[in-house]
Each structure stands twice: as structure tokens, then as C-alpha cells.
Length: 408
Image 1 (tube, helix red, strand yellow):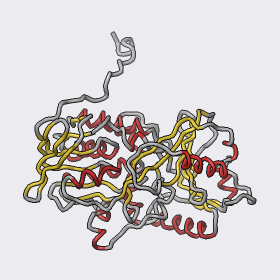
Image 2 (image 1 turned 135 degrees about the vertical axis):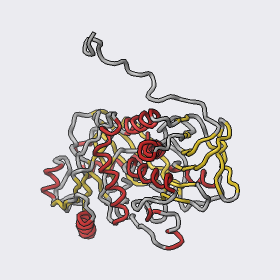
Image 3 (image 1 turned 90 degrees about the vertical axis):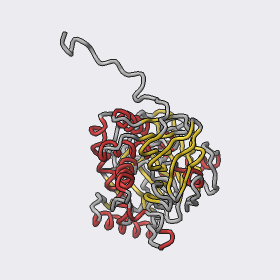
Image 4 (image 1 turned 30 degrees about the horizontal axis):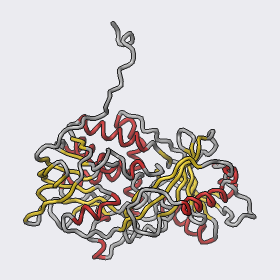
């Protein structure tokens, strides 16, 4: 019987195994979201380190990975940020083939609108900086904005007229669940243990070096421990006696009912403070900035959703009759300079990856690649070296508040 006569292969019940924790591992990764899974994958693929456990207190990729709005771009202002995000974008462009799994990466472009002369000056500055850093970027006038996205209201009489926009054609969106499943499947196939429902309750440190993690499923000895806990990073770090310079905030988003394809790109605006894209199935995905309060809650609030919808309607009057289908919140970790912390800690063999704020999803393959290098070699890769914990004492900050102002 030929292969064709046998019919399509049966889909497996599970994409990865669910093993019991071993007594010890070379590397224990705390957090089974996109960053944790990507780190495990690149540790195995690029560095041959497969005695790795990824510990997730809930279900795999059930935290911010399941609660983000999937925007991918690299048009950050500063050289340090552009470097790591552009590296991530290049990995995104080959990730589906690399993982052998459909991640539905759609390079539909991202528009960042300018509504004032100051917006225009800052936007043109960012375009020039992007080009110097090898990032694709264009400045569009209002008519060019309309050609890229015909449903944006560019009429001059509105409260915040569109004076132009930056445009990154290679940017876009991907299917977040598929990204997590692809990394998990590939990592597990190389021998990584993915352990769900395993909450870390303590970190054992002796002689200035990490020794083990304590979990709800027993003590696990570890040669190295890598934190990838996003909004709960400060909680995990405190178990090892570290106080991280991060604050946790809710970030709320919403999706509409399913619509016919009408929104061809991603549109972001600082002035009206909203970003809007259309997902693969057809729903509109909307979000804005973080809540001002510190909180770990993962749900929406009506007044925030109301402001997001009002802002979206200023830009897209065509959506006036669309209905909200569901809302949710994630927990984001924010640093004083709006840039991440990726690297070593004062505790030997304890590594930290946090502070991505609202930009964590887009960085997933890039930070996983850099973080794996850092863990494998005991020193940061040049791409993540600027994002050390020490910068908050040396003053070498990477201030990206302007490029990260609309959350994504």
C-alpha cells in the first residue's frame, strides 16, 4: 500500500507529553509561556541542553501568552531595542518552517498615526532612526495612510486629524496559541520536560548560588534556574531574596463579533490611545494602555473598555455598529525605563527575563534565542547585554516610553 493510499496521518491527542517532574535538571525554567517555551527550544536546538524542565503553575501558555493582542513589530526608537526586536522579527519570518507548525504569521504592516506637529516630528525621527538601524520604516502622508488602510478617517475636521503615520510593512500579527504550541511541541520532541500545574513556592539558595526550586509537586534540584514569569516576576524573584525594579499592572483588551475582512493592517494611535487589528477569523482586536493601578487581576473593567471603544470609533466610524464579544486582562511587568531585564542576577546561576511590559509577545523568538545563549554561556549575548539588571544602578537606561506608549 502506498503512502497516498494510507490517507492522512492521525492527529495526535497531545502535542507534547506531560511527565512527572524528575529529581533534578540542568536547567529549570519558571514560567511556561511563550518566553519560557522559546528559551527551552533554543537551549535544546542551539546549545544541546535538553535536560530542561519548564514549570507552569497553570496550563501551558495560559498567562499573558493567551491574553495578548498578537502584534509583532520592530520599529523601536533606540538602537538597543531595535536590535533585539529586529532579531525577533527575522526569526518570526522563518519560524513556521523552523518549528514545522503553522503559526499564521501575517505580515500586514503596522501604522503608527501622528495627530499633532509634535507627533510628526517624533515619528519622522523614529523613521530615520529605524532606517539607520536596518529596520524597514516609511513616513506616510494622510493620503498614503488612506491607501494603506481605507477605513481610517483621515478627514481634516475631526478632533485629532491624521497628519501622517509611520509604517513598517514587515510587521503584522500571528496566532498566539499556535506559536506556543509550536514551541512546546518542538521542545518536547528534543527531550524537554513540560510540567503543567506545578507552582514554584520557593527557591533554595546556598553560598550565593541557586540550588533548587520548591514546588507544589516536590523539590527539584537545578543547576541553573531561569525566570520567565512576566507579571509575577517580582513574586518569584523575592523567593530568592531579590527585589526587581518592576511593577505589575493589568492590561485590558477586547474582541468584537466576527466580521468580514475589512481591516487590512494594524493601526495604532497614541493620541486617541487605541490600537486595532483584525484577527484571522474576523474579529476586531482592540487594546490601549495599562491600567494606572498595580494589580494581578486578569479581567476587564467597563470604564476602560468604554474608552477603548470611543477611541476606536474616532479612527474607524465604520465600526459604530460592531458588537463586543468578550474582554479580558493580562498582567504586565513594567520597568522604570519601559525596557526589559534579560540576563544575570546577583545570585549565581539564577537568571531573569522580565520587564517586557506590553511588548513581550513580539519579542518571543528573539528573547528566547538570546536568553538561551545567556543561560548556556553564563554571560549575555550582545543583543541582550544592554538590558542588564545593573543598568538601574549605573544609569545606562534604555528609555523606550515613546515607542511603547500605546502598549504594543
